[in-house]
Image (cartoon, rainbow, N blue to C red; front, side):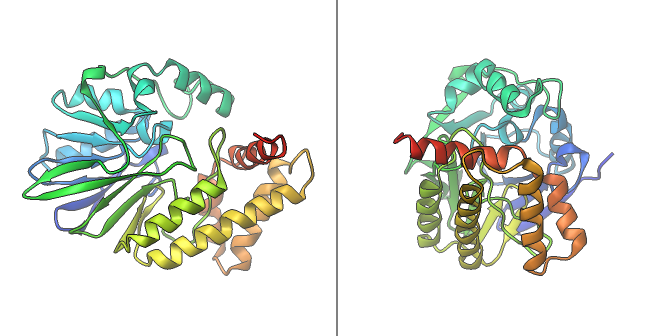
Length: 307
């Protein structure tokens, strides 16, 4: 059984390792332990017990708001289970994601197609519907109060997903970026894009990277995984890698690359940039390889058809 892992990041802000897939450093949840507690991300239902254990360890028996960056299963699949565990909590989500948390049937069907398996019996576990009265619908410019005059600012950030949000908090300087910037495992903090279908759009992501940079955050809180303390470097690397992926996949012709060829090209790129082999293996074990080129290819095809 994984151990509880809680890391202080600033005034009343903690990173909780959710031990997704029963492995460390897969999914970071961010807890503001303030008078009006807010938790960012909860992970899939299959592994949400690890999050509950961490909250118990901290002596926390109530949460004001669970806020998800987006509704993909690795971020929000356990939101209904969380709502049952904390009956006074609200669940905050972008307006386009809210209907899918109230009735997750379409989301689960879409995920089953993307993952080629029933997510309820696979890596993620089932989703429980959330009473719409408990959903807090968010959009650009909204604020989540933390108490004592503090609040989280909300930025609408499509590109990875059309229902994606980024959260900013001034006192800690945190920008909690979900998957919008990509994935950034802590071994050397190399940034890698995250480009699943159906919503991936590199132009939208580039716009969001520039908007995040304009806020001059103290650190980026990646969901996968943890804080990056040099936001300008991370955001520049994210943009460079994003367009390198698009150009390479486009160069592979109308059918796109084989998944194995894409995977090898990405990992070889990490090696060329000096990443140690054990850290390359860390990326290899944590990336959903078939979904990445599929998302880019879908965008390229849509662009070619004038969509």
